[in-house]
Amino acid sequence: EAARPSNFLRQIIESDLDKGIYATRRWAGSPGDAAHHAAGQPDPAKIRTRFPPEPNGYLHVGHAKSICINFGLARDYGGVCHLRFDDTNPEKEDTEYVNSIIDAVKWLGFDWSQPGNDKPYQASDYFDFMYRAAETLIEAGHAYVDEQTAEQMRVNRGDFGKPGVDSPFRSRTPAENLRIFREMRDGKHEDGSMVLRARIDMASPNINMRDPAIYRIRRATHHNTGDTWCIYPMYTYAHPIEDALEQITHSLCTLEFEDQRPFYDWLLERLTEGGLLTAPPPRQYEFARLNLTYVITSKRKLAQLVYDHKVSGWDDPRMPTIVGLRRRGYTPAALQTFAERIGVTKSDSWIDYGTLEGCLREDLELKAHRGMAVLNPVKLVLTNWDEVMGAGHLEPCNLPALPHPPEGVESPVRHFTIGKEVWIEREDFEEVPPKGYKRLYPPRPGADGQMLPGNTVRLKGGYVIECTGCTKDAAGNITEVLATVVEGTKSGTPGADSVKVKAAITWVGVADGVNAEVRMYDRLFLDAQPDAGGKDFIESLNPNSLKVVTAIVEPSLANAKPDDKFQFERHGYFVADRVDHAAGKPVFNLAVGLKDSWGK
Ligand code: ATP
Ligand code: MG
Ligand code: MG
Image (cartoon, rainbow, N blue to C red):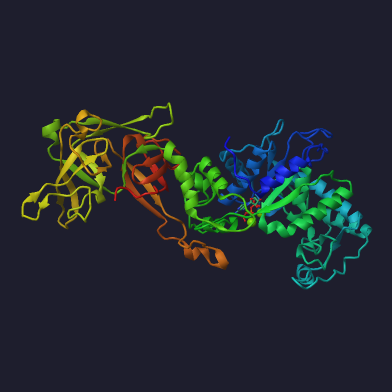
């Protein structure tokens, strides 16, 4: 395994391992692990990390970064990474999202299973514990029921530089709080009529420490616990408990949670004092979220694109969702390389979209089979074919599918035929060639009035041909390019080099070419930072982000299976669409262009 570059998270983990901080952990028998680990047993994992999505949408490229960090660190340091559904918010969650998240993590190449446990964790399994923990806090005077309105609470919380004001309910006795909290649980109070708050410090410079709400009343059916509960824990309260119960050692999150860290530590200290948790507690560390140019990474905004039909769905190949990237032709290896390349830092920055594209190109360059596809076809007729090769003759040709096969491996071979008529790209013929043009152009008068011959090029993998002219329709559009085949110049035969040419052009035989729908994608937004500074990202949508063309592809491409990736020579990397591609109805998506534009 290649050494990976260090970063601040690796340094923290290495230092913790050196000090043996987590070496003597024993399972407590708490609900996070009781089903899998007997109480008192040592924890065989050196570290535990977790990826804790809320199942309220599809994962995107930012989550891919988080997945690669969390699972990657666990892999590298003898640990385990938990997949945990942070499902404490009953209204927004759905099993459709649960399943898509499971698929996405697996597809990225990560595995959360441990001996005896291949189920993901879910926060809602800890509702009983969270409730008990809340009662413990109340009994110790660390929490109280507040009946101020939401507006009063907001106002009384104060602002930066201005201390908050104590709630009139702050001095309730533990017994009174316990009684009312139990009434909340028992459905005796209206939704929104009161909340349970931690009692910390209304004058704290950190607003998050000014008695944050930890439980609210909400009559909503939960996808896991049904109607058992009408009170639900707040995210900031639930999350540290989830981490602690699962014996997470390093709880990694994005920078916006930095201000929550004091509450995270406060809560775990109180619960440890109260005897509900065993030391050492997990620690939270923050890293910069991924910001990618020309891309939006907010589930809410991505949902808006889907619901307003700006894209065809969550898996539209223009979407930065993992399902979208996958359908676009991205590979797990490309996304893993991307996550490593952008690294882990503590300050926000923008990553250039080209970095992501480069990672895909790198992965496909050596792996993707080559093939020829004509995206903007015009017919080329070899006028001497019947005479030289025989009427109706089809000559079998072949090329390697992989120009640089791995060592010791022989490239598969693509078979196709050439006959009297082939398709070429329209741009490969110029009636009046611009300076330096090396592809097909007809005979033209030279300086002394003598006619100069038309240009010769190689039909890649086929023959050298000499251009003789073209035919046009009444409107002057070119309908056919005319050329003659030069006998004895077939690629791979001894005569192949007998005629020197300056260019080889791609083509597909009329006899064996197959029509294919090709979706040419461009970036979804015109603005590099479509939603920065409160801009309306909808205004920045690129009206030309999808262009559908009918291309003609060689037989090896037409026989692709869904999800097969190819390099269409000179055009870029394409994938057979996972959803719409079928035998007899080929559909390809542009995954990423080639770095260098072809033969200009
Ligand atoms: P969104 O803001 O898109 O709705 P989220 O943060 O609410 O995302 P969660 O399901 O809570 O989504 O995220 C799961 C994990 O993924 C969290 O640990 C979160 O920090 C991380 N994550 C989300 N977006 C990014 C991002 N752009 N870059 C890195 N990590 C991210
Ligand atoms: Mg979230
Ligand atoms: Mg978020």
